[in-house]
Length: 380
Ligand SMILES: Cc1cc2nc3c(=O)[nH]c(=O)nc-3n(C[C@H](O)[C@H](O)[C@H](O)COP(=O)(O)OP(=O)(O)OC[C@H]3O[C@@H](n4cnc5c(N)ncnc54)[C@H](O)[C@@H]3O)c2cc1C
Image (cartoon, rainbow, N blue to C red; front, side, top):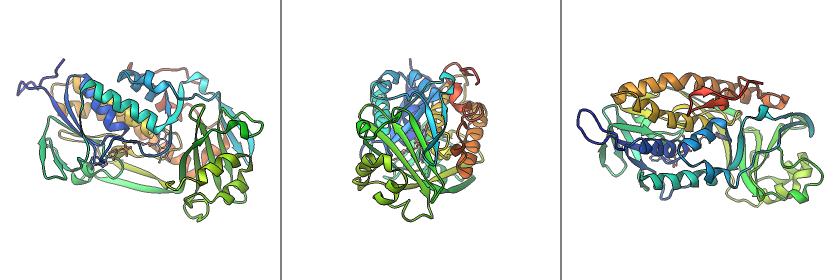
């Protein structure tokens, strides 16, 4: 059913900048609530960046809410345990008290959301870069076109032009560690004995700081996150410096050899962005444009999707867009801020290396159910 602007009597319109996980989720959820939605992607095609991704109960519930869950579940994996190793010895195995979680390739998740956006009738424009917005509800494109809407959503990622054009006050910092992320063939049979269906978070502090997050996505694909300090020229080198990684993790040599063949690999630092507010007038920022966070808790996309989905809930409960956005930020921000802060702490202190670090506080965002708006799942 169409959602009508009470003053003009017309269907409510939204212009969404950025077709990542946040923008796609916001666009689908608004469209499902009867909005007329246009989604702008600056690239020439809709595609995911990066390698693999962990989605937890909160993100999976969003997928249920936008009717994309079944497509996503097929071809993804829930490991029997999240295992932590220190110097190649197991220190803990966590199962999160049965809390649902999944690992998948980013393209798998992105494709499912793109498919759903088309199904519900989101108007998708590629080669359409947003360069500015204003609080009265105008979005300016690189082409010079100015579009008016009841709502503007800035989902244009960590380098958001929507945000930067509007003078949001921000703190931004980059951590000392970074990561090379890759998808390689599983090659489970070539790895010798071991519980290779688990996630294995392999930390080594001697003789150098190097970590591999070993994450099976399905029977065929393995997501490898190879972490090293930015100051380490060999650990941060791309394409991969095979010798330096095999020396530390010899049992993974078959997978690392595949990883070293990937020319397009990138080394990324972890970025954090904290804003004074996510909302100005008719403009809302969602996802990394509002709250980029360190990946220690693997919640950046989860929080982005929850907040993008929740936006349409608050808007449907208020007669003015401005009031809906204010209520949305008040509702969603505290949990997001706590998750961002703890994730930043964990990354700065390399806390996950201790094992058993997915405490109740660390799983708070994961336990949130955006459909019922409660924290489900018993505490540990
Ligand atoms: C190493 C690492 C590991 C991570 N692992 C996880 C994990 O396991 N689980 C998890 O939940 N999160 C994880 N995250 C976080 C997650 O990747 C991000 O939080 C999430 O992808 C943000 O989505 P987004 O849609 O806000 O932004 P983006 O993914 O950056 O999407 C922005 C989109 O907007 C487009 N765009 C940019 N500028 C413009 C413009 N001006 N006009 C129009 N379009 C534009 C871009 O091309 C892109 O398509 C990880 C992050 C890192 C760095």
